Length: 248
Image (tube, rainbow, N blue to C red):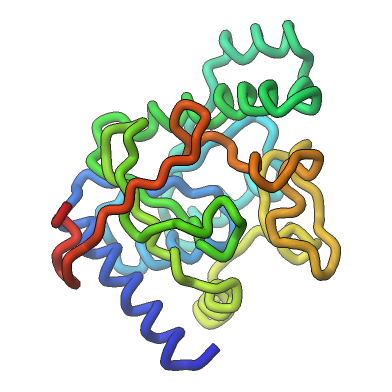
């Protein structure tokens, strides 16, 4: 990775975030509290951009992940808002399938993700004009066609992926250079972190998403946050030039 390429990516991401704040207010950032999203958190809060930051507390997260909310507050003085599953709907599902029923089939796992992530996301995005994720193309085969700017038909708004072209090396260079707090699970072999029972450490040489839903095939490894009617849909929206993110 050249210094020039890293500097180019960083400058482009800063510009993208500023344009989102200017052109799509109110916008929100869905923070998974993992490394990529801590980079975006730092960029947003250092620049004092008016972009709301929230997280989805599924009820099954690692304690190390939950502790990141307090670390963000201690570091930046910002309180990340948490959105949780509907307790009645979740209790009904657990009574029918068991607390770990998601291991039984892909369908049940997606239902669990729907209750714990997708429905709360809908509430978090209510009233917003755009939302932001920390997704990168290099993360998995399901994200290889990821675009900087996409139409999200499920929520009727635009979705931005400002780190789309970043490599893992870019992410960690930024974290170390700017002393960004990060989830300690990353130092324990967890490059990708989700719910505790659905995430394991990976072995050297394994794909960085291999520890997510490791009992499933790679093609099904999405939680539903970026899926419409069970299908991964990419509707790319091309920005015509810098400064024109609002050009559909």
